[in-house]
Structures are given as C-alpha cells and as structure tokens.
Amino acid sequence: MKWSEIDANAKKWTREAGERIRTSFSEELLIHTKTSPDDLVTNIDRETEQFFIEKIREAYPDHQILGEEGFGDKLDKLDGTVWIIDPIDGTTNFIHQQRNFAISVAVYEDGIGKVGLIYDVVHDELYHAKIGEGAYLNDLKLPKLEEVAVEQAIIALNATWITENKRIDPNILAPLVKKVRGTRSYGSAALEMAYVATGRIDAYLTLRLSPWDFAAGLIIVNEVAGKVTTLHGEELNLIGQNSVFVCKPGLHEEISKDYLAKFQKNP
Ligand code: IPD
Ligand code: CA
Ligand code: CA
Image (cartoon, rainbow, N blue to C red; front, side):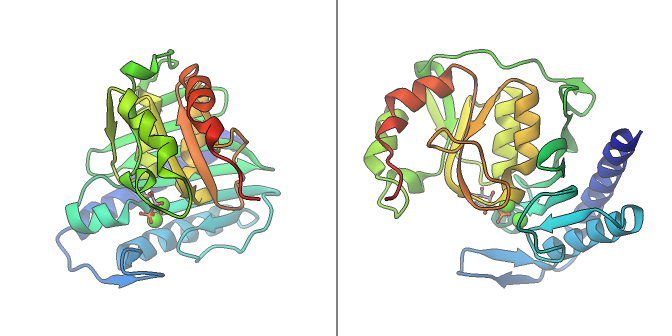
C-alpha cells in the first residue's frame, strides 16, 4: 500500500505541477542568474519546487526532500524516505524555447530508488517506473533495451566535451563522435535519460550532474535493462555530483573499453 500510494501521489502532483507550468507560459517570467550568466533560474522553477514541498510535507511529514532550488532539506545521506526533485530540468530551454524541459521526481528509500517520474510538460508525456514493475511512457509499457553496435548508435552529448574543457581531454570523446551514426544534444539530462529508456537514442554521457538531474532517470533506465554508471564505470553517488554514462546494454561495455578506458581519474 505504502508505495502504490506514494507512486499515485507523485504522479498526481507532477501532472498538477505541469499544468501550472503550462499556465505560466502566458505570464511574465522572472529570470535570475545563479552562479554564472548561463546558470539560470526562474520564479517558476522556485514555485514548482515549493508546490511539491508543500504537498509532500502535508502528506508525509517524516519524508525528506532534496530539491535543486534548496527549499527542501540539507542532506548528507539518503537514510529513510527521500524525494529528489528537479522542478524544471532544462531551465535554459524552458526560458528560450518553452519546450525540451521536464519535471524530474524520484523517491528513494534508504538509498534504493523506488519511484521515478520524468514529465515532459509540453508533450504531456510522463515517463515513469516503480522498482521491479517496468517502465512506462504514459500507459505504454517500454520494452527492454536491446544491444546495438557503436556504428549504428545515436548518442547524446554536449559539444563542450569534445572542445577544450576542464573535465575531460577532448581527444577521448572525439573518436567516439566520429564513429557513431549521429550525436544529439537536448539540454535536459532527465529527458536525455528518458530518451535512452525509450530507445530514441542509444546512449547519453556527460561530465557533471547533480542527483536531481539523474535520480528519476536512473530508476527508469534500470527498469528497461539499461546501464547507468559514471564515466569510470562506478555506481552513481546520489548525494554528490557525478559524471554520468547512460547506455544500452552491450554498448556500455564497448564504449567503456574502446573509448573511456583512456579517461583517467584525477589523482
Ligand atoms: C541542467 C540540464 C542540462 C545539463 C546540466 C544541468 P537545469 O539542469 O540537465 O542538460 O547539461 O548539467 O544542470 O539546471 O536546467 O535543471
Ligand atoms: Ca537539472
Ligand atoms: Ca533545474
């Protein structure tokens, strides 16, 4: 009972939050910069996070909340039941395009992902999974992912990682970009993970994400037998920042061995 109720509430609140975001399109947006001119937040990101927090605190006063905009709790471990929320993943797209963004909500218990939701608000597409019960796009059950050769793969990654940057030698990923059938970059980590889960793309990799960016995607991709690790092949840490490598089975091993093996950990 507990988890089916939490799952139903998470879905209800996510769809309600999406409706509020759609309504906001006709209103003036207040845009603020956070750490740099390309790190943006809006009043809608903040109001959406606060909306979830009110609902969760009222229904589940003993649950903890980790939210990007900081209205939840400060957590250094994932004990108990923890909601991990990105109210708008893809804020730059939200501001510039009014599309290609999503709400990401995950519920973990003692570090185990139980419920994951990624809601593409504009397309009214809810990607969702409950541990052990498969993943869905709205009412449609998603099939398990099948292997694909690197030459036939479409991978999502940001052009940053094949130009000079401080996290990875561009010569590591450039040969991969040359080898694959195509690359894409959608600007929302949550949607990029959902796209791997549906098979629209075959892999997604990036050098630094926070738990709210990937917490729901991790649960959804696991349910379709996809593989999610850091670029070094380690399990993701849900309390800190990580590189993230989301992939179809088989392709994960191939890319890890043939391309990522040269990616050394910082001493
Ligand atoms: C960002 C998006 C983007 C990723 C960034 C994230 P935000 O989230 O997921 O695709 O490259 O690292 O911070 O700030 O729009 O919630
Ligand atoms: Ca995000
Ligand atoms: Ca966000």
